[in-house]
Image (tube, rainbow over all chains, first blue to last red; front, side, top):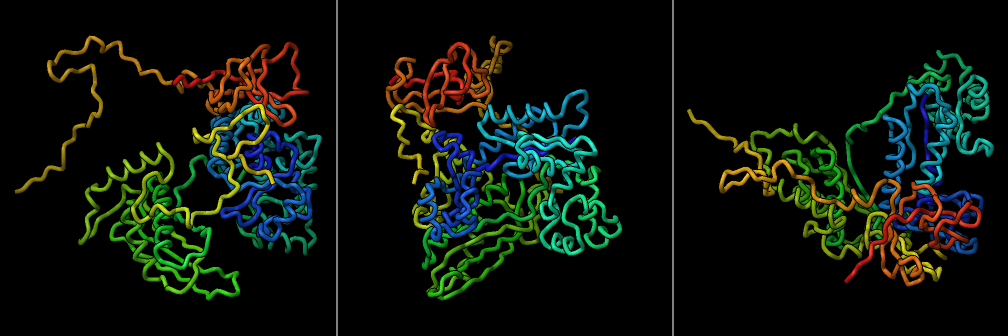
Length: 434
Length: 122
C-alpha cells in the first residue's frame, strides 16, 4: 500500500505556526515581487470576491476590506518546514518519495497486521504535534488511488483527513465521487474530450475499454487507467534524477534602463544557479541569458532577446559562468528600454566527473576549485550571498525582489527568531497585519 | 621516455592529531581515550525536526526564571506531562505556564515544551 501525505494550505499554515493570532483568519501568500496571490488558506478561499492569481495591486483594497492577512513568500521558511515534515515521514517508512514541497508518497508495503487507518492517523497526528502543520493522508494500493484517497480525506469531513481505500466498495465510491477533471494525470484537454463522450467521473473512465484509452491517450492514459483500478504502474522514485537544465528569472522590483544594474542582477542569478549546479556535482555546457521589457505596459517600447553561449569546457565555476553570461548580456542589451526581467538558464548539464577537455582547452587544473569551495562554505555558514562576485555589486536592493511583507526566517536565522512577549503586540519584524 | 608525476597521493590532514606526535614519534598516551568534543546540538536538542528556538522579549516571564532576551529551546514532540514548563497559546497569544494537573487543551493549547533556557550572561 502507498500513502500520499500532503500539507493543507502549506504556505499559509507555515506562517500561522508562528502567528497563532492568525489561526482561523484568512491568510494569503504572494508570489515573488508581491505580484499575485499564490496560496491561500481555507478561510481566505471562502471569501469568493478574492480571485486567485490576480495581480495584487488590482485587489489590494479588497484584501484590506476583508481583513485578509498577506505575506510575501518566505521560501526559506517553507523549505525548512517542508524538510521537517519529510524527515518525520522518514520515521514511518524507509521509502519516501518527495513529490513536491508539500507532498510525499510513503511506501507502506510489507506492513502487516497493522490498521492502516490507525497508522495514517498516527502520521497525521505526529506531524501536527511536532511541526504544527496540518496534513491529509490518503492510503491505497497505487499512487493514483492514493492521490484520490487524499482528496477524499479532506473533502469529506467525517474522514478527519485520513482515508484508506482498502476495499472494492470504497474504491468504487471514491471513483464515482471524483470528477474526471480532478483525476491525477488527466489534463484539461483530455478531460474535455472525455466529457464529450459521456465520461464525467473517474469510475466511468475505468469502465472504458483499455484499447480505446491506449489509442486515444497513449501509455500515460493507460497508466492512469490501470492505477485507478488499483494496479500500481508508477514506480517509487526516492532519488530525484539530476536536473537537465537549471534556470532562474525574476522580475525586478523596479524597471531598469541601465546595463550596469542588469549585469548585477544577471551575475546574482548566475551565482544562485551555479550553486545548485555544484550541489548536484554537475557542470553546464551552455549559458543562456534573456532580457525582456514589460509587455503589460502600453507606454513603454518593447524589446526582448536572448543569447546562448557555449562554454569552452563544461564548468560549474561561478566566475567563468558569470563572465560568459555577461558577454551574452552585453550583446543583446540595447539602451533606451526599461527592462523588467533578466533570466539565466544553464543547460547541457553533465556530471562533473565526465568533463572532457579538447585540443585547445584542458579542464582547468582545479585552480579555482579551492576558491569556489571556500566561497560556498562561507555562504553556507553566514547566509546566502555573504560573499559574491564583484560584479554582483552591493546595491542589490535596487533590483532585488520586493518582499515587503515577508515574515522572519524563524527557523534558519538566529536574529529572526520568533519573539514572545507579554504585551501581545506583534514585534516590528512580524508583518502580515493590514 | 619522460614520466610525469600527477601529484602526491597523500591525504591532507588539516587538524593536529594528538595520537601521533610528529616531533618525537611517540604515540600520545591519550590515543585510546579520544572522544568527540561536546556538541550542544547533540546535548540540548533531542528531536531536531520538532525543535524550535524562540527569543523572549521583555521581563514578563520572570517568575519562571526566564529573562529578557533569553532564548528558549522548545521541543514540540514531548508529552504534556504534569508540571512541565510549556509555551502555550491562549486567545492567539503566547503564554508561558507549567502544565497543571489533569490538563486538557481547551482553554490553552500547548505550542511546545520548554527544555532549556539559554541566558546570555554578559
